Length: 102
Image 1 (cartoon, rainbow, N blue to C red):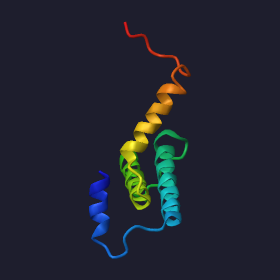
Image 2 (cartoon, rainbow, N blue to C red):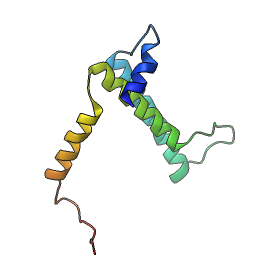
Image 3 (cartoon, helix red, strand yellow):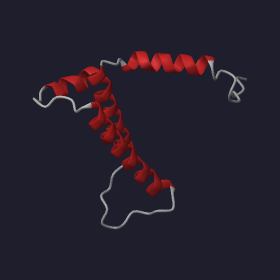
């Protein structure tokens, strides 16, 4: 996925935004996700004239900007994922109640 995003961004002269701009964009996208979750599960229904967005699309936007951010900084998200999973599987191995495997 990171390679596909890089191929897409590489076709434009502007390239990747600066890290600070990407952090701001990521914050905007998380806010849009929060709004969608609040509309669906919270106490704030959409106004009749509001656009019909989805949690799926908002998560996709966050994934896209995360890959842009990682690419611009030379971070391999597969490697980052593996490190995070190792952390959770060791540090937090006994933190939660596991389901029975019967």
